[in-house]
Length: 574
Image 1 (cartoon, helix red, strand yellow):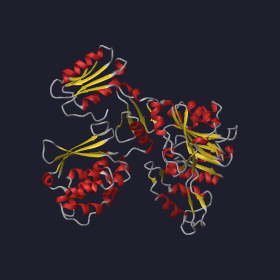
Image 2 (tube, helix red, strand yellow; image 1 turned 90 degrees about the vertical axis):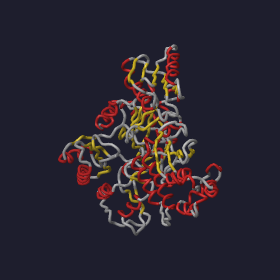
Image 3 (cartoon, rainbow, N blue to C red; image 1 turned 135 degrees about the vertical axis):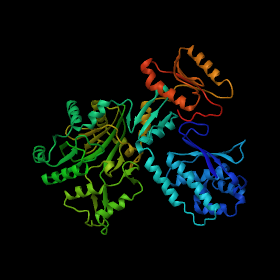
Image 4 (tube, one colour; image 1 turned 45 degrees about the vertical axis):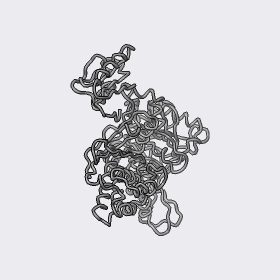
C-alpha cells in the first residue's frame, strides 16, 4: 500500500461540514485481497484494538464492522476505521468516515475521516497502516498503545487551547465559516467583508487600548476608582528595599502581584508579615524574572469569584478554589501533589480542563505557614497548597452563574465597561455573591482581557456554560451576518464565461462582486491578479482582499463572490 496524496479539508466540503482528511490510497497487490481472504487477519486486528467491535459501519448497529471484516472488505475501508478508533482512544472526539472506490483507476481508494488537529489526525492513519502491515508481515506482537499515546501527545501539543477550541466548535455548530490561522490561537470567522477574528478570547472588536489598560493593574485600579468601584488599596514598588515601607503603609496581611502580570502568575496572597513578603518577592523575581514592578495590596478574606462578561452581559460565574490535597497519614505533601498532578484532567499550561500544581509555588506558600513539602499530614486533613485560585496555578472552579445577585452582575458589567472591554473576566472577592452587594463587603481584584473560559466549560461542580458560543453569538447574532453569498461554477467547458455572466447579472443589482476565473481575480472592474485563478487558492486570496484591502480603497466591500472551479475541484474551507 502507498499514499499518493493527502488533503486537509478545513471547512465545509463534499464529504462533511466538519474538517475532513482526504487520502488517495493505492492498495497495489492488496486490491485482490479483501479481509476474508487473509487467514487470521480479523482475529488479530480485533485482539490489537478490541474496541473496533463496537463500530457500526454501514450496518447501523454495534458489531457491523466486524461483520464486514468477516464478509470481506478492502484495506482502504479498514484503515479508515482504525484511524478513527486510534484518534478516539487518544481522547479525540471523532466518529465519521467514508471510503470510496475509484471508478476509473483499479486499486485506488479515496479515504475520508474526521480529524480535530492535523498532526494527530494523519499520524492515526500512518499508525493504522503500521498495524495492518505488521499483521500482513506475520508480526504476532503488535502493540497499539504506543501509537495511541503518540497520537494523544501530538493532539495536545498542537491543538487549540480549551478557550479557543470552544469558540471554534461553537462556530462549526452554528455553520459559521471558521478556520485556524497559523499554529497559535488565532481564528478567522466569516467570509469577505463580514470576516471577524479572535485570538484566545480577544476579538477583532476588542479595543487595543482597553487590553493595555487591563494588563496594567495600576491603570485598572485608577480607572475603577474613578468610577467609584470598590478596589483594594495598594502601592507600586520597584525595589526589594521598598517592601518594608509598603507593608507597613498598607497593613498586613497583603498580596504581591506583578503590575503587568496575567493568569495568576507571580501572585502570592495572605502574606502575614515582612518575612513572608520578602520571601514571596524573592520567589516571584526568581521564577518570573521579566517583571520589574509589583503591586502590594491589602489582602481581603472572602470567596474568589470570576465573572465572564460578553458584550455587557453576564455569561458565566465561577467560585474559584485554590489547589489543595487531602492527607492520608502516609504520603508527604510533595507526594500528594505529585499524585494529584497525575490526574488525567490536569495538564501543562492550558491543554486540559485543569493545570498541574506548580511545586515551587506550593513550597513558597507552605513556607509562610511554617509547613514543608516533606511533612506527612494527618489522615483526612485538607491542605491548601497555594494561596490563589487561578486555574493556571492548579485551582478548580464551581459554577455559580444562577446564584449571582443582580447587584453583583451590575458591578461586573460596570467594571468591564469602565475598562472598555467587550469580553472580560472580572475577579471579585466577596463573602457571598448570592446576596445583595453592600459597600465595603466586596472588592474587584482584577479586570482581565483575554479571560480564560475553561473554568466555565469544565467546572469541577455545577453546570457547564457555553462561553464559546456566547462569544460567537456576540460576533455574529445570525449566520447570515457571517458570510457573503457564494456562487461556484464547475464543469468541462464554459466555466469562466458562465462565471462572468453571473457576475454581470449580479452587478445590475448594484452589488459589489468578487470574481475568480481562468483569467484572474477581479473585484468589480478592478483586476487584482492575473493568470489561471480558478482554484481554491485564488478564491481565498479574493476573500482576504475583500476583507482587509479593498474596503480601505473603495468601500463597501464585496457582497458576492463568484468563482469558476476546475472540473472536479471542491471548495474546502472559506
